[in-house]
Length: 146
Image (tube, rainbow, N blue to C red; front, side):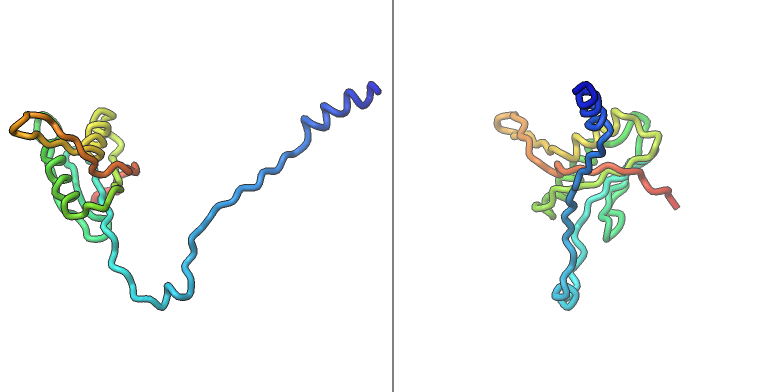
């Protein structure tokens, strides 16, 4: 009896528990290869560098460059440009934020705030209306400039 009391916890502790995980993949079918190639989808990328914010489409290239002035990044100009982009692509909700290593945390948070929510002021009531721009934000490292 004593042997069973000692061996049972020992066997339970040393037992290897295997875990099965399933990763679902969407693989192309043979029909998709025969179909016409689709136009590349719009993919918004905001690259924050030490001296400039670059706004672009991953497939089409650079859309705008906002130079940093002595006080900081032109976040109001960024917000205005993002509102125009949202007007052209109203169904798009995703954006990629690419950062250089020396960008401060406060700058990252400020740019993310401008990406997520747009604001407009009603001149009659002077109330600020907030609306969604690009809430699905992915973060990565900025590519090295050429």
